[in-house]
Length: 130
Image (cartoon, rainbow, N blue to C red; front, top):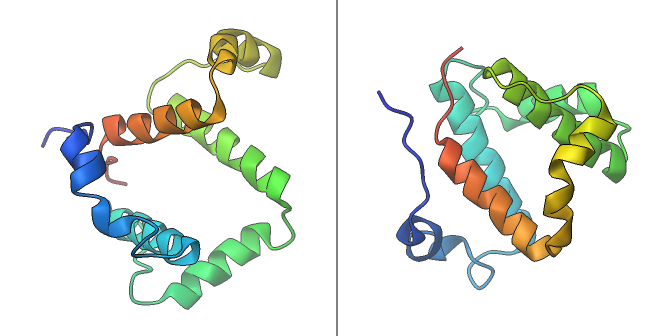
């Protein structure tokens, strides 16, 4: 099956309306994001946490119980680079080289960069199985 991207405005806006702030608070939005990710993990052959979120929380606490917000953001970047490499990409290994390649992105404001992040998440589509 093809890796179906989610990049149409209808998929971003109209179909996503139920997830907006007038229906959900930020904690509910995050909970739904985690639920969707847990559902995808189960679908691709990983651990199925959807019936036991306590196990998910315990697993994540075991890895990062004392992590601060900056470390969490840094870990997410490292995970994205590891995933890019595991998918066959060749990102530079040195942080300076990564910054050099990404420096043109730094001219955009944070909101536009966040939109690009959502776009890329949709463009990558679903993930492969274990």
